[in-house]
Each structure stands twice: as structure tokens, then as C-alpha cells.
Length: 91
Image (cartoon, rainbow, N blue to C red; front, side):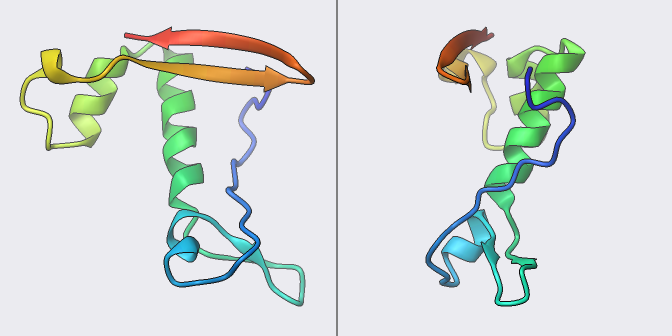
């Protein structure tokens, strides 16, 4: 994956309590403010894909709402690198 081990940040333009949970916005001093939960989740998924862990095992171990792995949705990861798209099926 082209992002390597770089930190993924969901940069938001409008600051609100809701958006600061999922992303981060730049302050006047140039620092990022926010929890960036979307970026953290995407980095966890990237790490699981790179390590060869199956998506279902990762999802089941991180989200306790799933009792039956057969009920999980099929997900794919779309990577866009300068217009070249690569689709990875996570199963």
C-alpha cells in the first residue's frame, strides 16, 4: 500500500463537536485538533491487511457487536494512487 506506515488523518474543514470526533482540523497555530477516529480505524484496517489477518477475524476482535461472522458485510478496500485504483477484497 502506498501509504506505508504514515499516519492517516481525516482533515476536516468545519470544526464542530461531531466532526472533531471523526477527524481533525488545523488550528490557527497550524496544529491539528481532534480525535481522528476515522484515521485511526483506517490505520488499524491497513495494519490488519498488511499482516495477513483475515478481515473477519479483525472485525470480530475489534467490534463486539458481531456474534456470527457469517453476518458480516463484504468489504473492499479501494486504494487510489495518482488515478490508478487498486481494489482489495477483504474476506
